[in-house]
Image 1: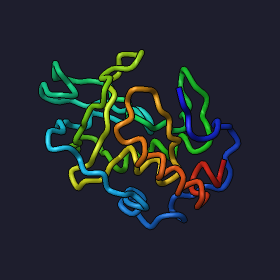
Image 2: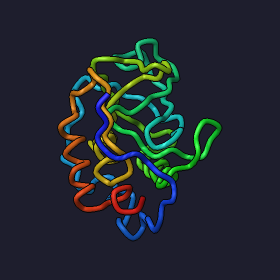
Image 3: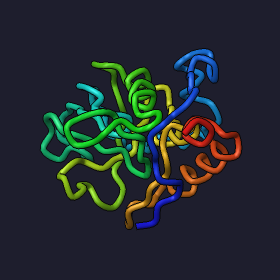
Image 4: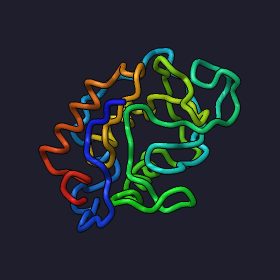
Length: 181
């Protein structure tokens, strides 16, 4: 595994998304190159956001959800700080990353998903890239806004260059985890 970014540590100080961005829409589109969703991306409905990089969706059978129904999806190439839960302690900007994803992907909203080489991770979560209907590349937006680190698990690398470049820009601008944690 190649991990780009630093290890998350507790003790976050002074990150206020409202100061950094005027709205959820501005946060979602700040410094995002705009990788377009593929024409065959699968349309699904957001059931709930688990945390910044994991959500539950529902959809008909397709390329990402072969059997259809409800599935847990882990966003490819991103790792957001953890939120407090049974298997993890809260990390710096974990709640903010979750709130960002929730703002971007509200309950019942439509989402476009596309797979890479491997469809499932070791926990049987579906692995996918995600776009909002207006074209925001969710994976990149999280990293571009400093709310996630780039993480690469071969062979899923279709958009690695774009997401890594977003991390470089966020780090240089000291956004989110790069300036507050």
